[in-house]
Image (cartoon, rainbow, N blue to C red; front, top):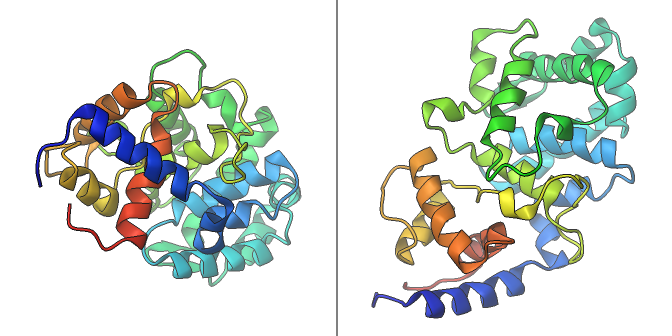
Length: 258
């Protein structure tokens, strides 16, 4: 493709972000499941769980999410707060989504139970006024890993200190922080700013970003995410992650030669 100027690229991506950040987006997206809950704390808890298993086919993710909702009796916070360890083991029995299994679900539920015994919201792991939210991702992982767990469960908590792009946690943060004005993201965490968010980077968004010349490194890792962040913040320093809708929409819904 011909090299686009920054202004041309911004205009194109602004248009695509506006096109795809619409409620219809929720019809076939795991985020749609969070809109079923009426309380922010249920959205926060279920959001972390569904974001953690958000890889693979979206229909499969949603199917597993429906399964999770039933297992949590449509009341994630109530179950997490009050269930005994035996009851948590029982509700998790037989659950599997790709490599995330019942043991992993028990680990997450027990970690969340321990957290909400001490704190009111996962938002408290993240501090306002810091340019990006990696410090909170590190704090979340550190807290969870204090819960007894199998070694294999650690892979479900991204380690940004080892160059992970932490795609699923950045997706979760987008849901929690960005404004709900357009009826898509939830905006339930009020102390944080959309300007602090980083774009969820995976093989699909990375492919489109490279096609557009936004990034040049070939690995989908933390260093590449920093490269992408820098470009997106130039185009919109206040809400750089709105362009996630553009990158996703172009890749998922359009057959384009970029």
